[in-house]
Length: 78
Image (cartoon, rainbow, N blue to C red; front, side, top):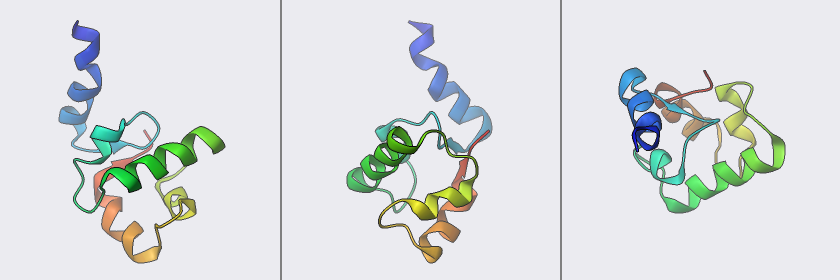
């Protein structure tokens, strides 16, 4: 059962949400990301492969330059 906690432990350790491993629930811990936007990020990741940089978020439908700037401090690709 410990394996189920690993994503949560990783999030707690860094304080950042990893764009390449986060679940819908993980994304929704970020202010401004609701269910729809979380689903859009995951759909983009599934269709295009791993995010190479945080800036790749701008390619997700509904995320523009202003939103990207707000999200940058909460996400990582590491």
